[in-house]
Length: 242
Ligand code: PEP
Image (cartoon, rainbow, N blue to C red; front, top):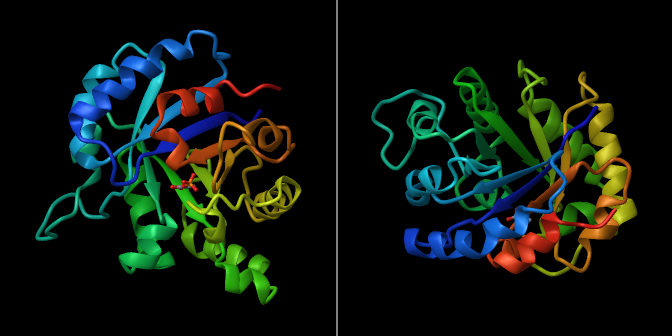
């Protein structure tokens, strides 16, 4: 049985004070949410500690947006898995296209980060996706298959989430056709040894398209950027209609 996982990715948004304002509006909206839906917030490092306390006793789980592969060392600006687990973080986004594009993340460093996350009991959310140019060149399948194969070398697929995020759909309002997202996610599933890995769709998920997205049989949830910053929008996404 595959889990449904809906995760907010706050990127580099929200101070601690703003995170508390968000929760005041957001948490009450979860009362009617079906219990089988897992809800995560993946937030900037500086928000993790306060959110760990504020989310205690709620059904919302906490995620970071990156993790280094060493446990400690001379890696200025990085954060390790034990530093995250100590404060109650359970999930970590790895290989987001913004990290691949702006910070030189490669499939090899993505793989190292996933290994370290799993070793310390974190659940990695591996992000994969093609650029517009790669899609136009007919390279979507090969790009995705390579990202999956290289990212998952020696990875335990029983503690893993994958997010298919076509780069041209992220933050653009240009959502991937739901049937096409479903097709690519099916293709990703065919590369896996564990058919129960939850595979999310990400890329301009909004209150007005979530019902259609979640109606697709291969799609097990969503990774939500911009729309997770507004409590009402994220609440509508979590409470999608079957
Ligand atoms: C993301 O940040 O992973 C994302 C999909 O962003 P957006 O929902 O804003 O497109």
